[in-house]
Length: 418
Ligand SMILES: [Fe+2]
Ligand SMILES: [Fe+2]
Ligand SMILES: [Fe+2]
Ligand SMILES: [Fe+2]
Image (cartoon, rainbow, N blue to C red; front, side, top):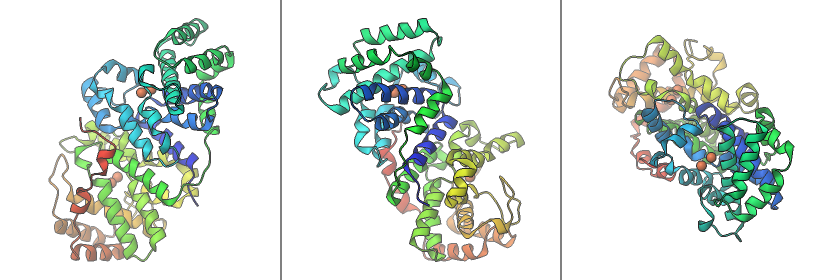
């Protein structure tokens, strides 16, 4: 079954919730932007999504990790980000706009995200996108003030006055907000988490995602995952590449091979929630740390939408299965061989093979040949699939190498190395 835009945004929401502490802020900005924007004649569905995505650039793990190193907190909240007051948060609007420009559904509005901290002097009050940017800026400011004080009448009145008297927003945006802010229901909604989520979810449209939209979502998620740690810079990208080739070699057909491609792109999504201190620990993990590390599977499972999503879209299961083994010794569920289909077996092998070729904090990466030998032994031990292995062996014999992927510069579209 085809994915739709609603499912895509909900994956991004769950990612945001699991990986950062900016989920409530994002929901508040989505709600305020759409209510204020509607007053100005803009589509509430568009502003709902734009408001939600406005700070998506903060998800850039390169920056998140720097925050972690600077502040010692694993997942930065909005107040952590604001406290930094440095170049670390500076690029988030530009990065966010780059991410949004790769989401076909909303790409033509990516400049709104880029301008969401602009003052009126940089905006044209006659241009719709600029007005929307100012609306999102205003919503952002209201949310930040709400999150940093009491949820009571006096605080709300203070925020109202501060916004109306501020010179940070276009007059049109302030005027619309002034009207909206007279409504008590607006304030009660904006501080009620469940209602906010409900508001967000109900205004998401269910437009079918084309195959290329789905792949581009996969790319965004893949780059975010890979860039998190210098040890995994190309991990997912290589696995996706190998998995797709294996699927083609296993005669699954072009369409199915593309589904495997997407599944491989999101296989380690949950690693975005794994503490960097564990991902990069320069020694053997303790049992407790292993428990946390292995949880990335469960986080992937939750982020893609849990059981309901997996039952609807079989390909989501393939990614989540990648640490299972045919003799039931794998995790997270210790599945048996009968529960592991060919597509899952492809990603299982690709993951082991590629991981062996990569440096880890506690060992050097192996050559492609040596890695293939290790995979061969695991196949003999009944852990990995024999048929898929023969296809991998063919690929290696034909000179498989990763340099083609490594020369790929698309990741610079999304992230700055700071
Ligand atoms: Fe922002
Ligand atoms: Fe924000
Ligand atoms: Fe994994
Ligand atoms: Fe992996």
